[in-house]
Length: 98
Image (cartoon, rainbow, N blue to C red; front, side):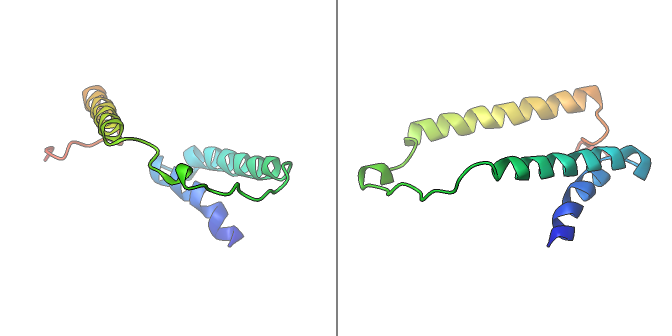
């Protein structure tokens, strides 16, 4: 389990960069950050979650808020993708490029 957990960040970084010398440092940095975050989480006591009352069991957003959030998220993704295409970023490839 620990080996699988530690291999995920290295594989994720390794698939984004070419060559071991480019990605190993960043992969190790992610692993160290994960270990520090785990250690930090151990500083807090465990507690029982609060009981959910009937009133709190409702939706967190209305249908209109959900729609607005989806539209804004879609526009942000579209703008980020268009910027990546315009700048010719290496890991963004146009589906129409042959």
